[in-house]
Image (cartoon, rainbow, N blue to C red; front, side, top):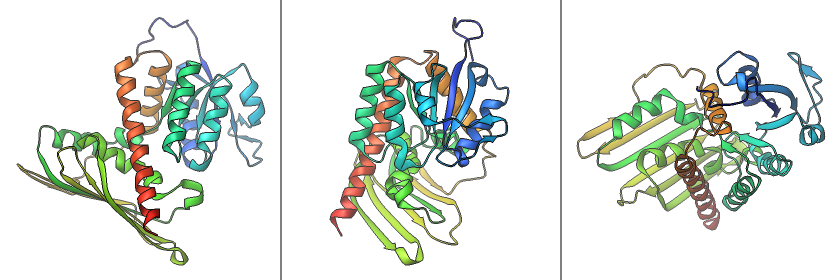
Length: 299
């Protein structure tokens, strides 16, 4: 990573909000000597739980994090339902924000927050580690220049609480992001949601269409005993791709995401690249909301 004429020794003070799985990985990456971590200085973490200090990292109150001159960056790693509120507070306090996906559970709210970030001249970055996975790199190479006829992507996993993580189209937005990144902007044809709440089971089936009217089916199925797995099938004029070969282990994907964020802090992305990314993120959130509306309208 080039230093791009930065002030020697310049470090951005960081606070991590939420210390679950993602937050813990973020803290680990910030404390290890990586190229991007050299630009960042972990000041502390914010949590609703009273944790004191973990691994010599101090817990600080939300109020202190927002008002401290030292804190210039917030990593939002809390439950999805709280993301929008935290993003707004930190942007209003003049901090740059990195947020785990989905940044919000509403398209309009995401638009408002992008506008706020632009008004404040701050970086707003939504993590998408799924685009940094070996599988995605493989798929991207596989589909390039091919004419899609039809495709499907099924994701299975254990139960997830909707109150905390949002409607399945939002909690599963990384799968939608794969499809949009591979095949361009999509439109919604129809969607169904089958739920057995007492068994913690749900299945969302979404029929999408590419700009060339090619059908794509996206299914999220979650319930006890379901293993975390992706099944895909893409049919092209020139042959088909059924399921994913073993393409190697995903190494340090959160760290790779942090590298991208730091490049944005240092002004190393072009306006064009940033605009294209923002357009994709908002398109995926818009689709997620359309799917949610469609499923609820059928109830």
